[in-house]
Length: 236
Ligand SMILES: Nc1ncnc2c1ncn2[C@@H]1O[C@H](COP(=O)(O)OP(=O)(O)O)[C@@H](O)[C@H]1O
Ligand SMILES: [Mg+2]
Image (cartoon, protein in one colour):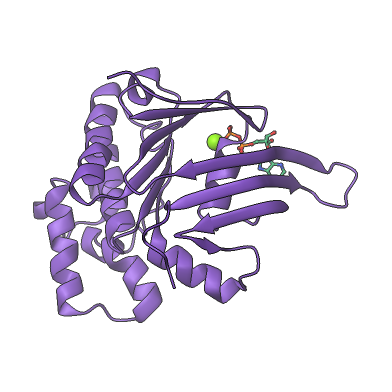
C-alpha cells in the first residue's frame, strides 16, 4: 500500500550504467541519494550529458537503476515486477517531456484521457469531465476537439501537461518541458507547473537549462557528471 505520510520519493545509493556487460559499459549515475517531499517544487539542473534525463527516467520507472533503491510513496521498487512498476507509475507519476509526444490522430481531450484509457479502457463520464476541467485549467477549454497539429507549440505542451495530471499524480516529472518554447511561452508553461504544485499539492521535479526558471523553483538540485554536487533551497 502507498504510504502517503512518507516523502513522495527517496533514492538511496542509486546507480545507473548503460551497455552493461559490453566493452562500452558506462556508469552514468554514481550513487545518488535524494529525497523529494510531498509538496516540493524542485529544479534539476546540470550540464548537458550529466545524467539528468537518465535520473528522471529512472525516477519515473521508465528505466531501472543498476544498483541502489528507489522508494516511491514509501514503497521500495527494486523487487517489483514489470506489472507492479507499471501500475505504480500510472498511479504516482506524471511525466512531461521536452517534445510533447501527443498522438496526432487524436483530439486534445482524447490525448489528455490517454493514460486513463491505457489503464482502464473507455473513459468514464467523470473522467471526461475531469479532462475538460484540466484543459480549462491550462487555458484550452475551447480546443478539446482540436487535433495537436492545429495547436501552437505552447498549446501542445499545455495538452501534454493536462495529460500528465489526469491521473492526479503525487509526483510530476518534467524533462526540459520548456526547452522547445520561446521565452514568453516558456514562462507561461512554467507558471502552470507552479500553479498545479500549489493547487493540487503535487510534488514537481523539473529539469531545466534556464537559470530564470530554476531560481523560480523552491529548490535547486545540481547534477554534475552523475553526482549531486549541490542541493539547496532557493532564496525567496
Ligand atoms: N540509452 C543510452 N545508452 C547509452 N548511453 C546513454 C544512453 N542515454 C544516455 N546515455 C549517456 O549517459 C550520459 C548522460 O545522458 P543524459 O542522462 O541524457 O544527460 P542529460 O539529460 O543531463 O543531458 C551521456 O553521456 C549519454 O551519452
Ligand atoms: Mg536530458
